Image 1 (cartoon, rainbow, N blue to C red):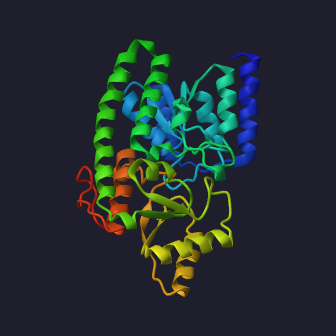
Image 2 (image 1 turned 60 degrees about the vertical axis):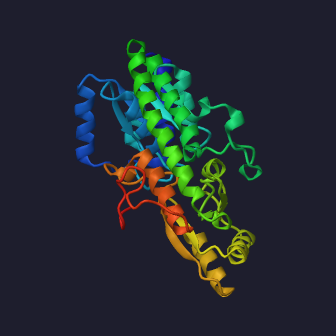
Length: 336
């Protein structure tokens, strides 16, 4: 490794350690990573679970895919750890969301990309900017939550296949074949979600959540979406914002709002209390997955399961029709 490369990684390490400290990954996981690294397979490092999931779909058994962020972790506020430094510096390929989704890590990814020793790809930045949301309240930035539109996220699957093909040209056709097969399932999921939302009475198609992560979902499937916070969870909801949401719920007779697995529900509780003072009962309709998926190893811990869960819960709580088992029959009552 040349002096420039060492300096880049040293700078990355200092930067991330200053943010995150030592971290507390368990011994079993560390041993598993060591075993994987000895297997001779390339190492693909990813950030959020949604990116990790599509990378695993495309890569198959041709590389070890390691996700940095577990379920319930907010990528907007994530503080990287010492283990994250080691993982990133030992990667062959890195995939991350981009568009400032991983705000505190974005600079680190750009440094590694500039170094040129590791292939680094921001999957959502491969999208045509004309397809991206850029609401005025986002202060000039694109909305990074592109996975909420299934067909838009399907294009990011192609970005992963292209990145792996650039890294491993000999298996390019294999990566692209896997991507295309997965994209066919995503097209079916998109059709399923569209039908669910259309089953909701039109006047009830209002989705109220903790922060503005569902803009692409609303645009793709025909909902209004309102949130207490903006694009990032690193903000406070103002009294005027809460009062406006209360007035909307009372006027439109919306009886359900939704919490998110990775975001505080403090603002939503204030909305419920405000509606109650005006004589309108609002309930928590359920927990949605926004910036993180469900538990690892479960159906909801996959991208398809995440979207299936969200769409099914939203449809049921807002007066629509949804099959008990969801898109693939894998959802069940009372489970997250």
